[in-house]
Amino acid sequence: MTAPTASGTMRLTREGDVVHLQISGALDIERTRPMLDRVEQVLRETGRAYLLADLTQLSGIPHDSRRAIGEWNKTHDVTAAALYGANFAMRTVTSLLFQAVRLIGNKHFELEFARDEAAARRWIDAHRARQSGPSVDA
Image (cartoon, rainbow, N blue to C red; front, side):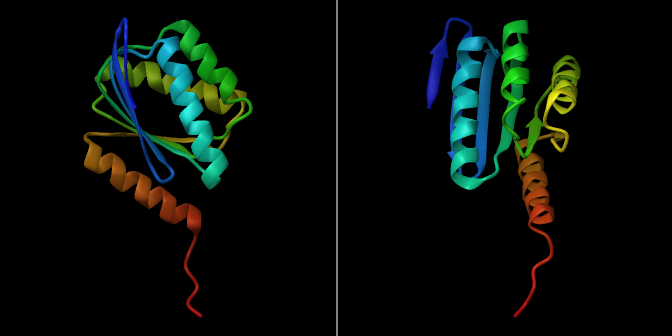
């Protein structure tokens, strides 16, 4: 799904239990709601959801979007997020946002900043393997 808005574009792609967000511009409220809806759908269908986000062209996260993400996380538990391509300012903003997520609801949420998409995907794969626990051969 690619959705142009007044402040840029957003693309959401689902890959099993992963929601891949690629965004250009601000993560405004008109983009936040479809993102949260997609993650909620994945949670319902698979029992877990990972957010893989390309922040290369993210310019900001307005207050109403941060508030909506915080409120949503009071009743939903995203498994983890791997973010890549973020500059220092966006790493700081998203780190603060996800620290708040942990404080208000999702205590087990894990966040990883990766240098590129491949590293972020490897981190998600490793996280998924840790969550699944050791395999038992019969």
